[in-house]
Image 1: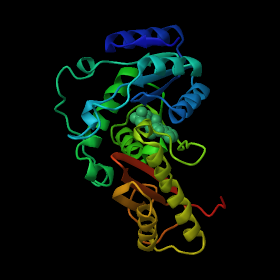
Image 2 (image 1 turned 60 degrees about the horizontal axis):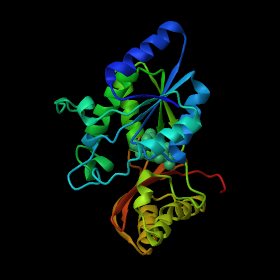
Image 3 (image 1 turned 180 degrees about the vertical axis):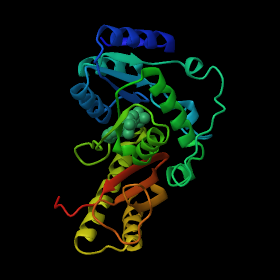
Image 4 (image 1 turned 90 degrees about the vertical axis):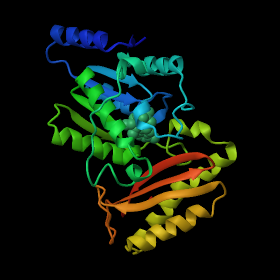
Length: 287
Ligand code: AMP
């Protein structure tokens, strides 16, 4: 069983002791909101491969949810997560309560103009402030050598990379490609909200990426044309209710007009009442 900590002081002194006993020990860290799935497992697998010790945090961070979002109903099952961590060979799990993480509401605000206010940030005001605060706190608690983030949340990855760069944090951020179900739907804890019919419609996102990739490969490089084609494609599917955005950007999330290999399609939409996000790297490679 992984060693479970709920208190900051206790995990800190445990990790300090570990490092004292073995000075060159590298620590890999995988921050999550729990209800673990294959995507999280890939991050854990890579951390296990690259580090002597792997720490996983499980914490549904209230600060990154807006009013009317799914904070209360977000799936939680610590027993199940612990069993999956054990199976994966995780050494340490940090699962704090709200009172431990936020005895008071943080007053610090983190804002990266041009990054935290766009795309997800435009539709979920304050979301990336919450993400940045919790990630910074967790990095300061665990002090890992490497931290693992999924490309599934591509903008989040870019926010974290920028924090590390601007604040000279002593950690290497390791991006992990998106893990998908067999049929192409990106693994997400939120997929449990989908009814079987909605689950089928949610596949439209992946299919729209393949569709756009085919258009790109046959010479369509006009970003507006591709975005409109993707939107039309998505809206043909039942239960696809509202598209927050379909955007095409370069690797650093700047919008592009002329699409090139390596650009990203980013999508946020509602299937029924469930808001899903996904993204795709456009390439010339045949699928
Ligand atoms: P979450 O528990 O949803 O906050 O995710 C925790 C970490 O796992 C984040 O770095 C996510 O980007 C990553 N993650 C979530 N889903 C996937 C996926 N399907 N593939 C790869 N990484 C993922």
